[in-house]
Image (cartoon, rainbow, N blue to C red; front, side, top):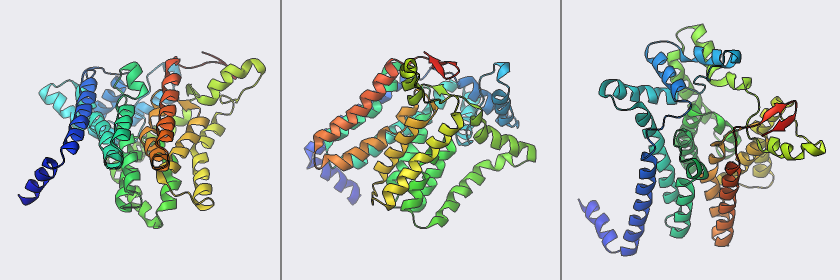
Length: 378
């Protein structure tokens, strides 16, 4: 009781802090309300996820369907669920409430997305509240009203889940390394793109045995697919390997530049050299991390992570509308830590520059490129 009394006494004697908390609460409530307004939106992957969940609940390996949709594109099927199964487990649990209480499934499946979306905002508060309230408000507006949500008003992507666990794992990196590795592994279990940050964890965490935590998590979430060799093969192919069946997708940056330069017979050949660019995107950030960490003594985990993401963005042949969201909270903290104390103006300019780049890139986005060899048409 003394602690509770002390807590209220602390706020009573800090009226300015109370006002700040109320302003933050208003931002969180407004962003929640705006997202709730589109909770009934299903999204393009909704039926694929529903089929995967229904197969899983009925005892059928959902990755068998996934593999077929990727390996037999001539059938014209929507791609099946193609990630590790952590999201599948959460959606299956929520399906119970849909099945028994008839709550709309699209609403239930947005709950973990909303929770982690708000979680990113809370973590920004933890990192910035005591240092600059103005910068925090600026950052929350950037995140909650990110270009994708601002332009499309769409809330069907699951990106916030992985973004939150990546962000939280970086927060604990160097502080509580076991927890950090667990959270990082959990992030990968939802979507695999955080693998590009692995060299940062190896560089900062000296006890390489902690990798066992990640392996154990992978084994535990994989247990339902160990029933037979066939199940295991479909699981590995469907969750990890089918992405190699993709071609250039979305609007990759180098392909977009090639589109405007092809009149001069200049092309980055991302279609012809697809595999090269895939591996370059995956490993370039790691090589840069090793160079900066060991040669230049750069140890800022947020800065290293941001640079790894940017290497990936520049080189990847697969860049979709929501992908540019991945780096946002990490980049905000990177530029805040590096510049705000010396020059707040630089922080605002650099943070806003990325936001505007993302916004302008989306504003002229169509479905992607039509391909004629390495010649592109919007």
